[in-house]
Picture 1 (cartoon, rainbow, N blue to C red):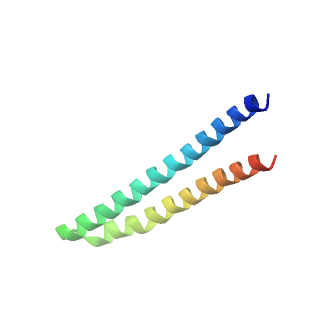
Picture 2 (cartoon, rainbow, N blue to C red):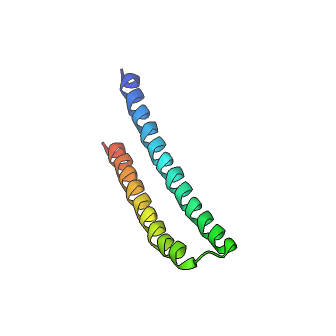
Picture 3 (cartoon, one colour):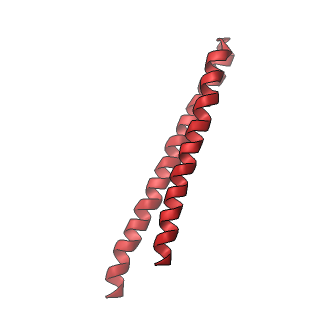
Length: 83
């Protein structure tokens, strides 16, 4: 009977880790894309003020979002393990 209760718990834990992993990959991809846009603008001699200004706002916002998402998922995973 204990195995039947543990299987859904493991499934939920795997889904939560998967969702956290997808968030890391997604936000990492966005930050990489923004960095690529900055390098491309620099190489083409574009006005750096717009591309750098946007990235100075966008990258910290996405990093903060990633931190909040990971904080929530780690908190959920630790809380579930203590029960």
